[in-house]
Length: 344
Ligand code: CUA
Image (cartoon, rainbow, N blue to C red; front, side, top):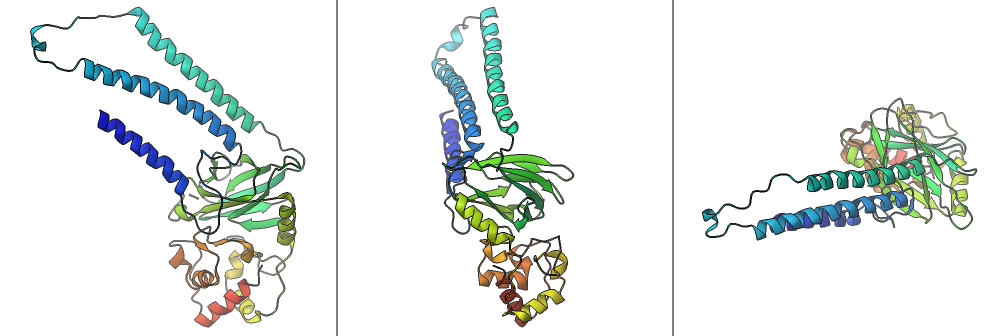
């Protein structure tokens, strides 16, 4: 019994500590523990879960304590065989108590949970709220800001709600193929992205920084490399980011060769580069590719070397991903990479 309890305690500790130490690519000042919320509604969810945890923990220790007490106090002793223990049969008080008490506890938990859910779901976007559409793909995130005219991938940029006012971000969640789930533990609970359906959620972080999340619904081979980064900016920084992203692709001409290779291949069938004839919709928008921290939804940091490897053979970095090996020569790979590097 003692060993089992110890094992349980150790396992729980491991689970909680592991949540704090999750490693991630690139720079981040966010941890992914649900116990360190950095935003509503994660804060409210944490308070509710702590209450539930406290109630369940108390019940666990009372029951386990009584069990240990009974095991020790009434253990087998020499001479026990000679007499029979007192025979107890039925007790209305005890049976009423252990029926009514749990009913009351469950009722309280239902009320508290329902209040939290209602609070979160009934929030209406205030004027000035940022609106974004997040579309799950195998295996990356398309992120659109219809009102701002911005399309990007895998990095959701939002303003912080600081002293100057509340500016939450409201998300419409959709899927282009199978079910995915959007989960950034320090910002909000998880919400599924389901084909032919639109789900809603909102976040309201107050502290600038990068917060990490994962797809939380198994969606195929590369489900594990479908990472989300939420970059929270101060309001001024967010304006700057918005202005940059609204620009068409840079028209730098120093990578003309690579540009030619890119447009001569089927890259254009899948990727959009704003302001060019490349208007494909299957893959991530590349207009400002170099402004993103990672490639392939967090599979690798966005460095020139990784970009080269990715263009040469995406399957090496992300087995099974839907971008094929384009069979480019080494020279063509270098040229395409120089072109992509102009997309700042
Ligand atoms: Cu998308 Cu798992």
